[in-house]
Amino acid sequence: MIQTNTITDTRERLQEFRRQGSIGFVPTMGALHQGHLSLVEKAAAENSIVAVSIFVNPTQFNNPEDLKRYPRNLASDLELLKDSGCHLVFAPGEKEIYPEPDIRRFDFGHLDQIMEGKHRPGHFNGVAQVVSKLFDIVKPDRAYFGIKDFQQLAVIKKMTKILHLPVEIIPCPIIREKNGLAMSSRNELLLPEERENASLIYKTLANARNLTGNKSVQELKNWIQETINQNPFLLVEYIEIVDIENLLPISSWNEKGGKIACIAVRCGKVRLIDNIILN
Image 1 (tube, one colour):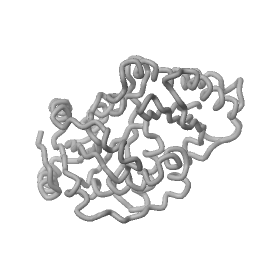
Image 2 (tube, helix red, strand yellow; image 1 turned 180 degrees about the vertical axis):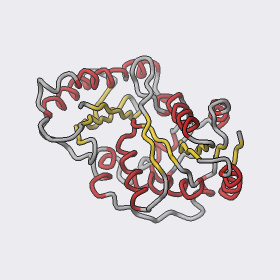
Image 3 (cartoon, one colour; image 1 turned 45 degrees about the horizontal axis):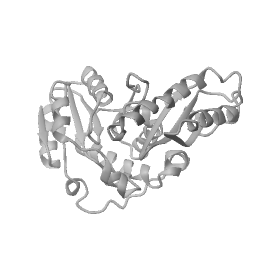
Image 4 (cartoon, one colour; image 1 turned 90 degrees about the horizontal axis):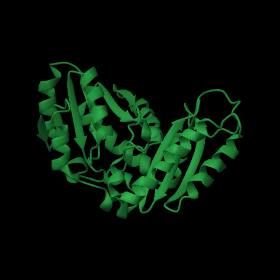
């Protein structure tokens, strides 16, 4: 496994690798866990070469304190990747990615105005800035993203279409801890008691899936929020039930298409997101 820190070196190394076949790419912000490794393993199964990036992207943080607190441990990340099937790790510094401020603005329509976009203004524009830069550097055939960040996945698909990028976006399943909590780098910031109580998020979503025949859409949203907020460690920031294709909120179970419940919950100082497909 090779580690690179510059764009030039990364491009040169990948040019050599490209002769061996397709390149699968897993962009990350580090603090790796089994969820990330599952993406790497899928990329390794479907491509000749796997590249992983580790870069905490400042432009997607609308809260400077959140950026400051984000967990970083490059040495541990590299150790985890060593036997994962990864061939190259690109771990640049901020100046390498942003030698000058990125002033590009993307138009995603409603996609970045709802849920995460509404509560984290500018977040998805920052995501698009860094992912488009990384795609340009790595030039992957396929890129792998977890569906825990379901709205982000939709935004990246849209960005790829807008920029006419020849990259296939591959969605990958949520990997959960034993108690059901969706694996996230931010889980490292949870205190043990918080981590234990945060399991209620997925338990509530799983129970909600069985109640779609008994409650209206609004009643189910209210029930999810009330159930989670009864726990003193947790506070729901939003709960939305949306169309799985266009992410627009639904008002009736009779509406056509699949439906997904997406949620953001505060647990102490940590913000957690999760989702579950309802039908």
